[in-house]
Image (tube, rainbow, N blue to C red):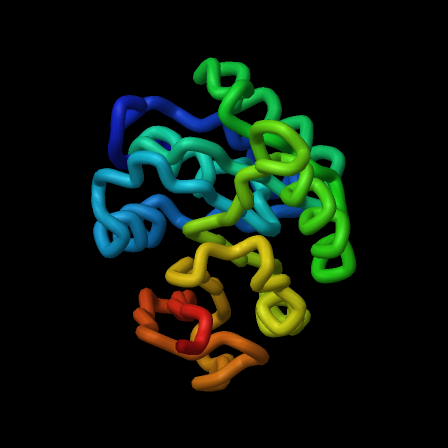
Length: 198
């Protein structure tokens, strides 16, 4: 799998054969289409990569200028793989990796995120994510469950949340505090774009 844009464009992301790892990475062409929508310049953005798998989406965001990515996945193999890929590209200082089961682990993500504020305790900056990727395994309802439980306190009010789902599975126009802004179908995959309700 190759990185499709930014300063790492053309570099290979390490990904063992799918038979050796219980993950289904977002196909390169769909990842490219996604980032074509988001744009080449993600400078300064803080990103949450849920069900991160190989780390390809978060690394793509860092390649395009993102300031920080929190990678979360339940699989120990995935966590090791994400770390290996971040080390390969010297990006560990721009990332945090958590091994957690989602959506239950969102509480831990919230706790960790609130600790990321800077400065003195009385003048702490509120650390918020600008971009969230939710790319779970298909046919388990995890995308919807994760979106339903995503804490808005850790999100920029204009944050964009991208949910990957199997085509044919329709996600609602409104989910908890989120509203559908757009959706794009790519064969067996559909990407849903949500924002916090105004």
